[in-house]
Length: 322
Image 1 (cartoon, rainbow, N blue to C red):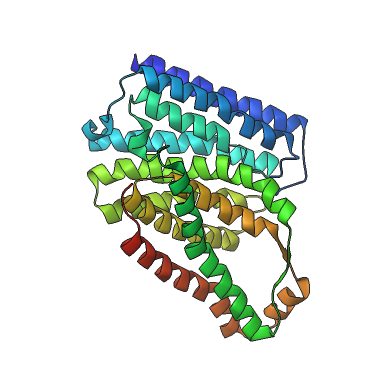
Image 2: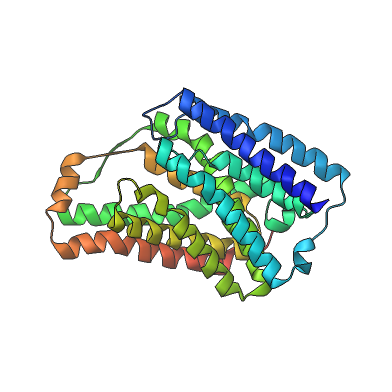
């Protein structure tokens, strides 16, 4: 039965991947923002409907338990490794061939099917909670304002202090709204579902809370090395891995306290989408490049430090298990 479920999961995963990749090949786009004008992006969102419908029907007629509690450490680590490698097997060609994260919807299929079909576990054990949806989304907005809002505000205030002008030229609301569905429903759900939901939940059963957060954050940071493979940029790769590792720590701590992925789905989507909507002032960027090294270092690191401290305090004292 397990081999049969594993075969179904693998076949479904690679079938969905093939569908998305064929759409990407047949409808190439130079738009790297993830706009809904892209056929493969629209298809990626539309393909979420079947997995949602299947999950609801399957869970309603199947007695799902909490088998995660019974797994040995070697079995748990093997499951995590296999899932991570399968995800990478689609992510790397997606980025190298199309320069787009088209692996997201297939990854959602892989994660959900692994949890429910292969492991016979209720997805709520891994943070996929649909109750009190409005409250969860509100918490996601608050989390974004504390984390992302404080970081961006600090960065732009520092830039204005050092060069006397703001780096932000305008904000494109249309771009923000057009990319938000993909970044929330596909990117946010897939990455938070895999790293915080699946991996961290497993790790917390056999490691300390801190080690579980650290290990999943490291895996999440390495997950992003692919964006600087071609052309190969080791410095950019290191920066990207470090910044996403930082988010992995913050998101892991939030999930560890709340046990709810829904706020993280929205926060993740808002972070990616808001940045995409920014229209930067080129003159201000050149002026910043001409500023002193100490000023550039402060702009690069101080927003992360302040945001990290504020977000840590917010999670520690205000976030509770849902």
